[in-house]
Figure 1 (cartoon, rainbow over the protein chains, first blue to last red):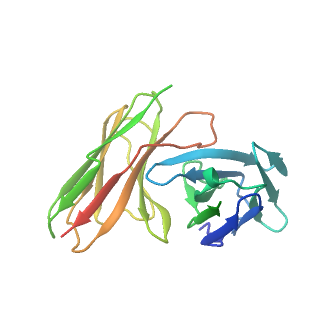
Figure 2: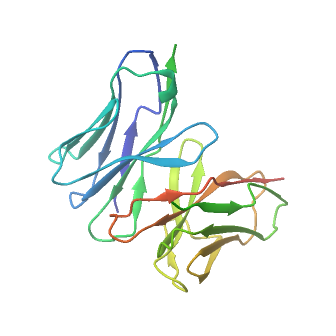
Length: 113
Length: 113
């Protein structure tokens, strides 16, 4: 079945620096991709979702890049600030089972002031 | 807007005990999920339910039962708690046409003595 590898597990950056989190997946039929953010003590909230036809999506302070050829999904926080300190999870949904969403193991990001 | 309410927030059990976790959502979503979150292991799917009275096993269903008697509620039972087990159980729901975008509850933190 689908496997999702997320790197790095922990990341510390200084305020104003960029932070990049990457996920690779195995199922070439994967079609929908998600990034969730979990702030300390809180539950997961959707940050962004991207589809197979989307390569780059820009949000507020971050960019998501999908490379289907390499089966790679990345989240790039530009100019990180302390409020970005959280756990980030990528998630992948294949096309064969519409209800199974497979999560990466998460990245704990710490933004130092 | 809606909310997913999980009860209890904290659950302390004894080894071998049967424990039930409850989840209610007022989004009127059809699909509901139970995930287990362990430190360093990400989220793993235990059970999901496409509609009322439907149950589907996830990758981690052994040792658990689930029940979806109403559209708005989805409960999870740990059939025999394991000693020193510690995890957070997350309930989620998903609206139709959202490509399985997940809306999460705040979680139930389980500790087994």
